[in-house]
Image 1: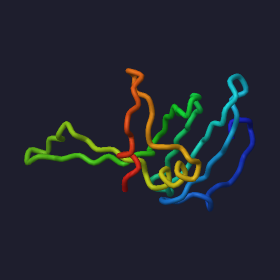
Image 2: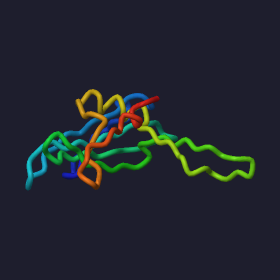
Image 3: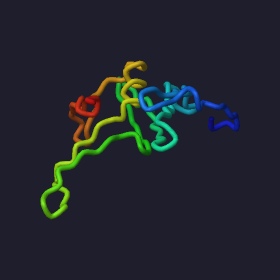
Length: 117
């Protein structure tokens, strides 16, 4: 868990449920979450960092589903839709992390599309 501890979470995760490890940033404080979910064929994680003012920064691997329109020539259209995987949606709702955030221009953006599915 980042500090040398080991914990078997095999039975705690699945395609619709996640294991959440909570920790505090020693320099800045605030809750941070390491969220792990999926199954042996589609394992992933996401990490959410408290950015203050009810905002979160995040990154992850294999934590989103992507949908794309493919034309007759097997070309992927520009509009690729992405959504959080069900295990991540479940964890975020349980943590009370809302589907919105600030964009690069400082304006609040609606990210509720990530929670569909």
